Length: 70
Image 1 (cartoon, rainbow, N blue to C red):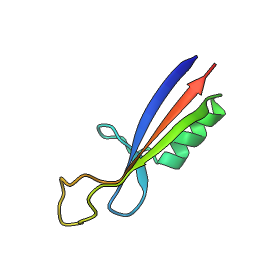
Image 2 (cartoon, helix red, strand yellow):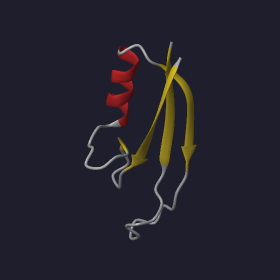
Image 3 (cartoon, rainbow, N blue to C red):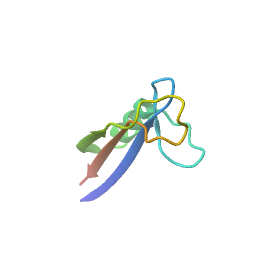
C-alpha cells in the first residue's frame, strides 16, 4: 500500500490551495484528480491558525489529507 499526504492552506480570500512553492492548485481540483487516479482518502485533519488579516506571517488555517492506493 502506498500513502501520500498533502497540506492545503487557506488563502486570504477563503480558498484552500495546495501548500508548496509557487503552486496555485486548488484543493478541490487536486483531490478530484487524486480520486480519479485511483487514490482513496485515508484521513483528513484540519488545523486552525491565527485569523488576523494584518499579520502576513501568521499561521493560517490548514487541512492535511492523506491518500492511500493499494
